[in-house]
Length: 186
Image (cartoon, rainbow, N blue to C red; front, side, top):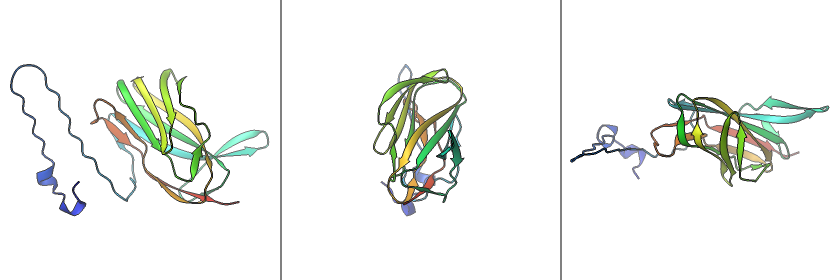
């Protein structure tokens, strides 16, 4: 681990790969970092992922989705719908989409399962810290995945970005903006 002030990109970011002999060689270099600041913009090239939150409200007999802007409070007991929009420029194999969850929200469904929709198959896995989506095969295109949460604890919660990454080629990665969610009490 290298603390930020000691990081020197001009000397610490060069990777040299040498191969002697016949045959193929593959190499990958990845930087891992952490910061207190949430990403303020979406990033990605091969992949692109964005995340939106909606408050689910009953209006008469219909369910209405109201976009949750940052700072708009939800109340303990409210249902929140998460929509993840994933775009890939090219077909990819073995892709992992991970969406961290705010500490004050709990999943409405805790069942891990294979799902089929949008012409693709994926494995959806709700966990304590977020929801994972695994794709063996992901054709080029844009897909929107939805799942529901219930607000259960008051507070202001920071949510890290949703990330998508090729499991065997981690240089192909993208992430969404971070978010701050506020849960109040009734």
